[in-house]
Image 1 (tube, one colour):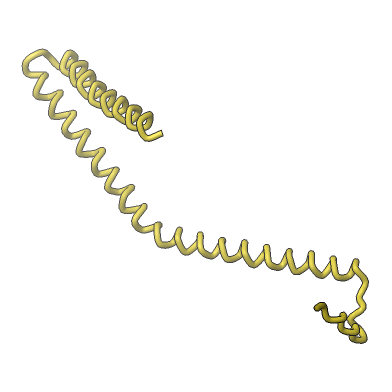
Image 2 (cartoon, rainbow, N blue to C red; image 1 turned 90 degrees about the horizontal axis):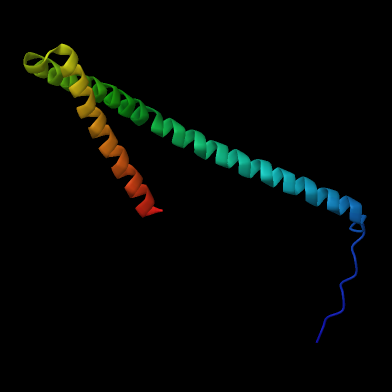
Length: 114
């Protein structure tokens, strides 16, 4: 059976507008706190990734230097047999073909995974 409603305590009869305003203010405070939490999480993750990202960037730079050295070596080796201009052109075609193959493979993987 239902219990009768408890008598209202004095001072608890606040207008509905005031209650709605308090609810909205509490919601805003909660949203600000959540946003602050996510900002803090993102900042800590960014700090944790800063050094590894710099190391990967440096590794990419060194790898590009190594690739340039290999390309230069290929062109110099070919220059003995077919001349410097033709060797540069053949070396360019070889590395463009390699890059095109990598790009084609990347597109195929992307199509397959999506």
